Amino acid sequence: MQRARILVVDDESTNVEILARVLEPHGHAVTGVGSAEKALEVLSGSAFDLILLDLVLPGKTGMQALAEMQTLTDAPIHLMSGQTDPDTRQDALLLGAAAFQPKPLDLEALLAAVAALPPARAGR
Image (tube, rainbow, N blue to C red; front, side, top):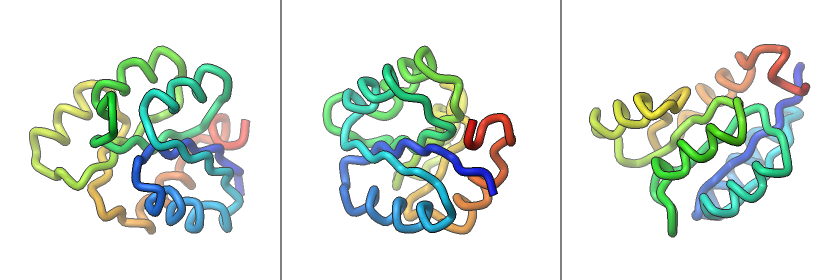
């Protein structure tokens, strides 16, 4: 199994903890931050294979941070949100999100998405 480095951006620390508890036993390294600003700071100095980005954050929203993150990394960015209306999903994908994950997250689908990362991406 390839080990992926995953950045989780969510202001709800419980969500970060749950994702870490699901992903780490599969060999993945999870870094959690609570704001878009902190995520941008971390991205400027570290490489990740996947970014899970919440839509609703304090300060910059996930949508606002998405474009900035794309200038710092080529890692796929999955936007997560409880707002599952089609317009929000479409906007996220049009702005460059690799996927839109409705909350509550389908953890099996998330594990499948991580497993599907290209070998050159996961664990490089």
